[in-house]
Amino acid sequence: RRRENKYQSLDPDWDMEAPAQEDPHTIVEVIRAMPDQYRTILELKFVLEWRDKEIARHLGLPLTTVTARIHRGRKLLQDALRKEGYVP
Image (cartoon, rainbow, N blue to C red):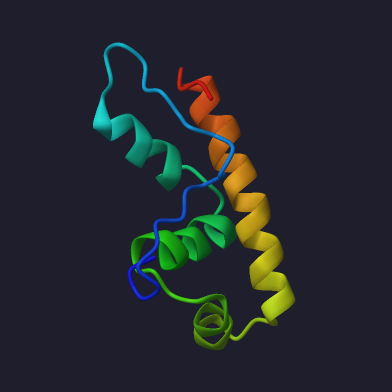
């Protein structure tokens, strides 16, 4: 994360390798196909690099809900990427 001068991957134990013929649009399509409640939170967390508290305040959700959706959203994204040919 930019503010903390760290990079946070989707899962620290999951180093993904792209399929041989990688299409960058595939990843974008996978993210856009996610349910809104997860996609929005993951975009705020990983693209805009917002903290969990900022996301909760912005969306008017309890912090525990945001944390749970980040966790579930990561899992959904990993599963979808596996189906597209990305492997851990």
